Image (tube, rainbow, N blue to C red; front, side, top):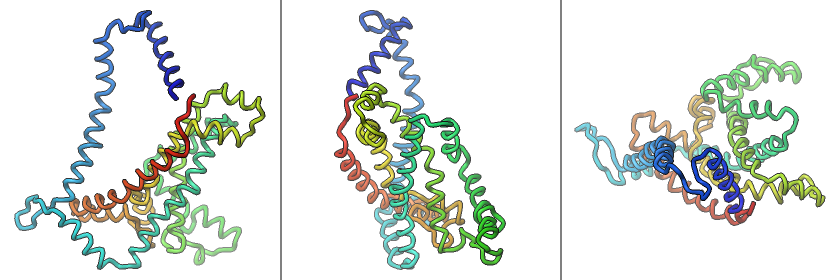
Amino acid sequence: MRNFIGTIAEKVKNHYRKSGMIDAGGKIKNPLKVKIFIVCMLALPLLQFCIFTIYVNIDGIIMAFQSVNLDTNELEFVGLGNFQKFFKNFVSWDKDTFWHTIGNSFGYWPVTYLISIPLQLAAAYFLYKKVHASGFIIVMIFLPNLIPPAVLAQSFTQMISIRQGPLNEILMRIFGYTTETVPIWLTDERYAMGILYFYSVWVGIGYNAVLMWGAMTRVPTEIVESAHLDGIGFFGEFFHITLPIMWPTLSMILMTSVGIPFTVYMHSLLLTNGGQAKTGTLGLMVIQTLRTGNMYYSAAISVLLSLISIPLMLSAKKFLNKIYEDVEV
């Protein structure tokens, strides 16, 4: 890795030598201009990070310990009051609803790790190998990420949920279903959650596949060519060359995916009208609490979920870092 970075740095220096920004000794000719350029380039990302990452998260934690006094209509510090309220509500919560919510949320783990990420990895590898029509494939797998979520969900709902939709039309023509017996997928408890899992795989494949594909392009072609001369095959190339080099990117995706059960809500919100047909999730619980207007109670629930998800993600990171050491390229 250090050799790879050093090579890139040398190429950058050569570029700036040709442009006249640095002299033959490697010193910058106009350091003030370079500093101004760097400040201008970093200003917007740094401002965005401070506002949307640092401020928003710290403010959310502070809100978890606050509430509005209904008598004075003023904001006041309530300590652990919001957390105590959650545990009181938890005791009285319908157990059937609770276990469905937990099961639905953590069901995203096997779906993500056993189906979604392997498909993303396979798509990225085929793009990296420049199969026929790879440009068209990139557009098609990334297309769901370019369409507004509400529009995409509405189109998907019409495709599978309306009795005259394409999927049910096939069932009626080929398998003999009638308009009375054909499933209404998103309102039937037997199918609704499975449809949401399928939807999550479909809409999520493009973004991570492009990230993985970008990481695979770091593999030096001379190493691959040398391996082929030594008789290494398709799987050997992938597991012994491509995977170790792209591991930092893949491990990041694997690590962040640990938090999915605690944050996912959009699929249930858009496809099943907020968790109908027993499709509620932990993330949707936070959103529904927020929609009642009690943002401080909702912030407390978010903090509790974070106290569970963050240690899990850090543990996953520690484990994943042991699989492949940093690779010299």
